[in-house]
Image (cartoon, rainbow, N blue to C red; front, side):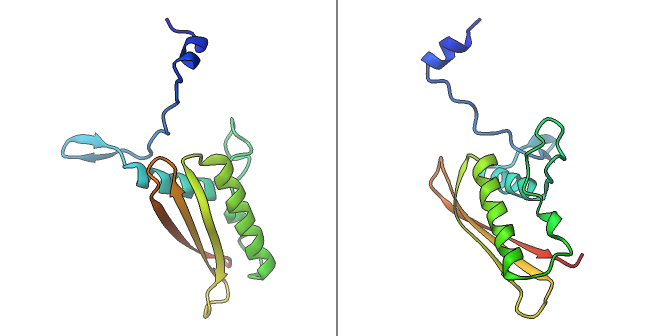
Length: 136
């Protein structure tokens, strides 16, 4: 049986992450590819409120906590900062390049969140866009 010390000597690297949500296809379970796994992880980070997970009380950005807040520059800046901070802390497979949060030009309570990131292992750039209604 190997010890932790012997694993360190062999430059042991932990797996990149467990993929989310296996789905049945052709009578077998299939898991999402790296791109989809990262998108799922980002959504989970953004939607999970702090103290929601028992063993990780500091996990999550909890952007739903901004519901019923005024759609002001200050609110959008706080959302942006929270997203950047939590992605940096909880999703090590990516490097966040840009987070934009802006108001919908015609709908006062609607926000558009766009996250641009680079996947560390492949170097590919990706973008994830989310619409959020502050009035719901």
